[in-house]
Length: 156
Image (cartoon, rainbow, N blue to C red; front, side, top):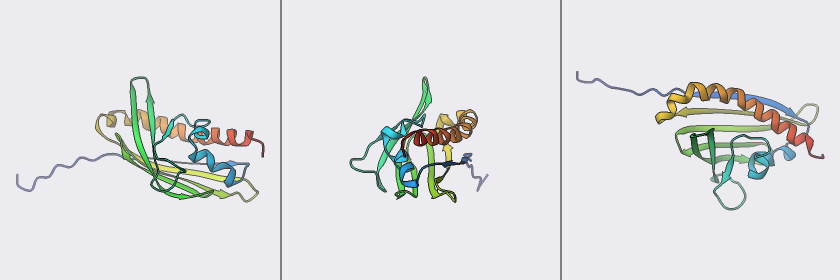
């Protein structure tokens, strides 16, 4: 069987969501980068690993899962435009992940906040992809809605 080639095909999970926040992009943006503010709206704890303010190249870890099934993924900021955009990609862990948050001024004020991302589960985590994927698709919009509520509850 000369020339026989075996390929492993890994499925990709993608997500997209958007929400309008009744605050300026400059008021919303810190909630994406500051670990203390991020814990107010996200169920995925973020631990900053790099010293100093977040910038392209800064690294953090996030932990997914519950109970004994947890995965820690190292993320690196790949692009950062304060008040406008933050993109990241994974550098370690069992999930390859790249994503982006975009903020635009809303037509009637406030901020149009959108997010999108792609994940590929590797190793034994591939077995959990159908269940984790369905949960992530539901959870991503819920997190943006929670971020909206947290930011809007702050005095303008």
